[in-house]
Image (cartoon, helix red, strand yellow):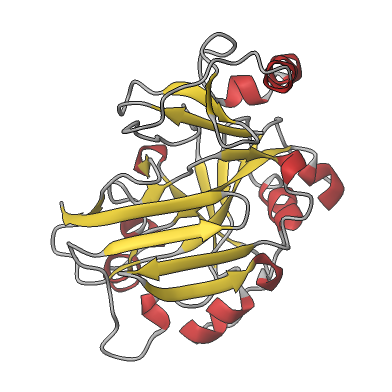
Length: 285
């Protein structure tokens, strides 16, 4: 299933995109798309049955904002330097264990919402990423197979980053990762049954119409199953938590000088096979 949330910010309603591309209203079956729904197999079954039977009312998609496909996110766990080609382009040694950092849940916005360039920023960068959405409480998982069984679905994430704040201002990466609007998510939460192999997905990103990133999750140093298993050794993952699994080569940071960092007025578009497409205009904060 392709689950999404539509409407004004803070007042989104749950919806489903059916196989014919028609937007369907889920309000009669679910209060929202959140961790509680993803952990409720019976509720998800009712949605599947209603969709298959053609019982869900259609919504008029014209002019309707698409919000983040997940409400009440508990935490956004991020994996750094998780692609072989990205490590090479930045001159970094591939990590021997996953690099973990966090984004606050309030950085998450809709897939087509405006992204704000922070005040004083000169190195705002783009990163297309595969996001993993947790559907079952996960702690001390023992295998990759067990880890994948705890995944509810997948989504497109844009891990917007401010490199000066991240790298040159001291401390951890968090200052360059948690600026407002720095995690567009969606358009859809695609349930795991529609993604049989998360290591066989192509990711692409354009800036002002120019292709900048063209990668594949096959390049991940630590595949999705290992990322989920590994993270569960250090923290409990709950339904509705999100893991951003890293970005492939092609970011501004890895390009020759003068590096083409983002500015107000730029337009970024990104997509992952089967998971949908995002488009953001940038503006000054």
